[in-house]
Image 1 (cartoon, helix red, strand yellow):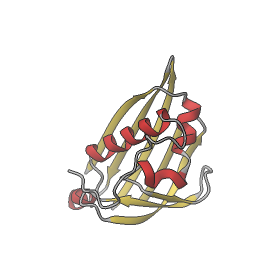
Image 2 (image 1 turned 60 degrees about the vertical axis):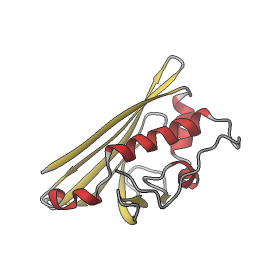
Image 3 (image 1 turned 90 degrees about the vertical axis):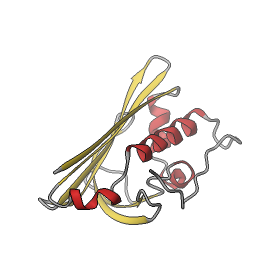
Image 4 (image 1 turned 60 degrees about the horizontal axis):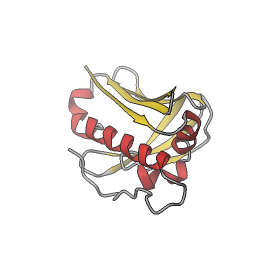
Length: 156
């Protein structure tokens, strides 16, 4: 059993700047309602804690392993248990003329996936994360246009 989410967004900011915004984990609660918390070391192989929202608006703390940390290009992590449930989440940043394209993808597999569907992120949640990242990256730092997200927001 598997479940996949693939989203993409064009951002009018350099790949390096988008990377800076994406890896400024202290600011995630301000723009990333799907994953409002991230704590740990930003290095490949590190085990860190991710606070993740469910589609109903509840949050859960997950222990994840960073599997790719490639500045300006990719941030990926995995969590779960072999056979039962494994999750892989990847942000890929592709530089283009006038900005960059960000791919925000996840793949869930394992025997428990059909039973966890209501707890797994949705495409709507990923799209909202993309919009928050875009707005944050394209806004002047500290400006009045910064996005604030309600931690109790529900997704469909």
